[in-house]
Image (cartoon, rainbow, N blue to C red; front, top):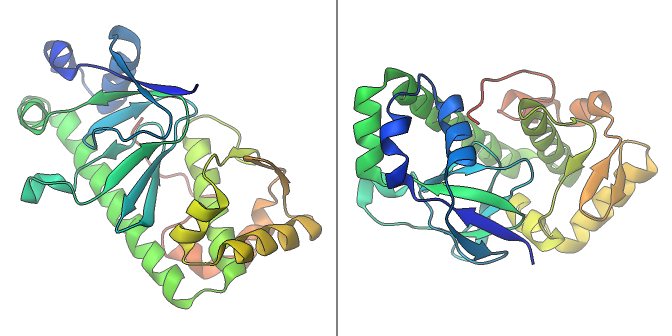
Amino acid sequence: MKQAQVHDFRRLEPRVARQRDFHRFTRCTQHNLAGDFVARRQRVALQGTINSQTLFVIVIRYQAVIGFHTPGDIVGLDAIESGRYVCNALVLDTSCVCPLPNEALCRLSARSPGIQHRLIEKMSRKIVDHEGLLLILGQKTAEQRMAAFLLHHSNKQRQLGLSEVDINLPMSRAASASYLALAVETVSRVLTRLQESGLLNVQRSRVQRLNLDNLAIIAEEAMEAGFPARRRASSLH
């Protein structure tokens, strides 16, 4: 069974405080702690950072999928203002997750400008992503939504040092459909049409041989809304 390893952040806090940036911080969490396990498709504590080359976390609110998180992402920031989580998070693939208590994160941010800067940067990126999603859902065809979705995940994989034309999408068709506000059958039909057009090749949870240039043409306006195919954006991993 695929599992997610959960690390105890409190044991790491003194070491994290000496890190100069959040990239080294997340590498430190991945290599220096051991902890309990959470089975695949179980809920995970929302506030934490994800460290793995393969993890996907699905975020659900009111039975609707509103996001997918990958290595380096921070989940659960929505609870900082109100003190309560409004979403559930499910692990879709193998990874380790490092819980970050809000109080500890605030102390570290105060002592380390690099961590504070990366945290703000990541929150800003999330706002841009959500604004782009809203524009896509309001104006785009099913093909444009799917093209933007694929380009977005291609870009995230490139930021992780992975292939941008052979991407892993372990979420179900139903989860993708919920996120894109499409019917499951529509998602399947769109992927089939894109494959028949030579823009990609679907092999179960992998989408291979992505034709990024032609997908970008389909999703041109979507890219301007925050789902870039080629633009290199700073990331937090």
